[in-house]
Length: 254
Image (spheres, rainbow, N blue to C red):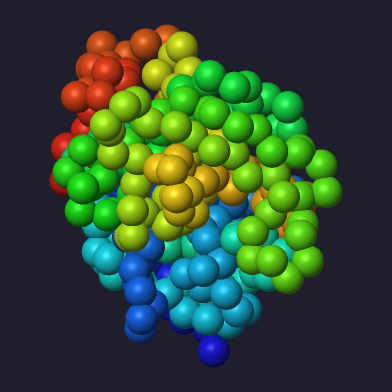
């Protein structure tokens, strides 16, 4: 069955990630836009513990001019906590939206070896605490292997990153699963790092890295159309409550 594809507000592409989506039993967050090897957008990456089987459906919550839309799982694996779902809109962007309507343009993604211990990494999801903060940030505390990320039947890759929050700070919880993890670039755009999947018993965020998805599924994050082009710092660049630089648009402006 071919499902209808939603359209974003006329004249503007839909965000590639950062929005909430729910199955019949749980809600999580859609991470970032995904392209095939030709560079054409095909959908989004989220976690397999939200949608674990090809054909399984998940429905986005209406957001930023895009109506609630049913997406179908295109690819999934039990060898990592990653899945690819169909596009929420026929007109897709590389941008990620935060819960307050902030738009982050993805202008790159991490390859093997790019993420370093001590690097600042953030994620934005739909746990109520995270959504109220708009994003949760910490520093890369542990970098897993970067090759042969599949771990047969374990439900997690061998390449996960651990991100430690500042002392006493929130780093994520239920509802954030699948959310985009990223680092900020000097021009205010972001580099896609991966997907938040949960926390360790000692309170560190577990991130499935983007290069695990590339190794397993082929393709790469979509870096085509942007809601806000990256480049020289725009005049409306602001500093958010977490000290991050990001271009602001109202939710109605998407």
